[in-house]
Length: 384
Image (tube, rainbow, N blue to C red; front, side):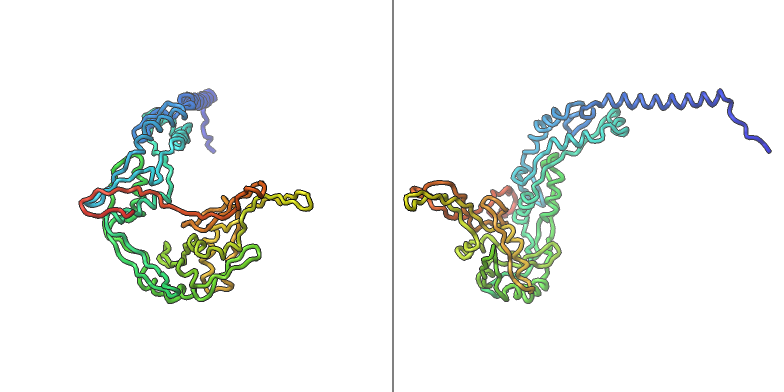
């Protein structure tokens, strides 16, 4: 049987030494690259043209705030067709997050690909941005009033307790969701953004609106809604809540009940105060020559945000149509989308003489200032 020849012992040893030497050289090269990278931002790193390579994270963030931050505060010019609009990024809820940008530049800097990239030219890092979605969406929604006629979703309103179908309507202009995406992608690197302009279609259909008016909307006003809290109950007749109820489009093109809870609570006024508890100051009384202290008491009010979320379910055909209101101390809880109602103050220890009576105060809301100004060849302007 033939025997397979083996390498001489001296040749095998030389091969092992060569392999070990190659492994050691690789380790030394990696260590050298590791030390070269250090704790600084990798060399050659840029953010929208701003070079932050080789700087400490703190210095890099300060440079981004100074150089790119100033650019991020400039107005953005949006164009669609022959019309243009100016957007203030700060009012639209957009701002540069310098620290998060530096963190992204530092992430993975000691991996082999990152070390090689740092030593052969560096890389460009996308700036990280803080986005207030509510403010951005509110800003771009005004695009329809500047660049054309927005599509109108169908809805159901009430005349007295009678459902009235408001059909949807096609529009033309800029899709707000697409505009928000384009603005977000351009900020803060570019201050000019081109937006597509074309027909806009509502999500709802006339048939959907008619069906909602004939079915769920009639069911919603078929019986009273009871609001309860801590053993107290208040029955609200359909004639009282229908003016503050609208069936609006959801994301899938259906219609869902939506209450203007702030106005509903304000309209019900004193009736709902039986469910709430006003604050009471501490008082002193004298009985048989002995002073007695009646301690102060914190007020409680209805949490309007929680009530806003619970009311729509009470308009369905399921029984009972009762909503358990959550009571919170003044200053706690969240306001509804449209604020209203009352909030009582917190009591403090004072003597009866000269002590002001604790009483509820009304809450109001003001719309935020608009963030769009139009400059176009036509007469279209954003509505106030």
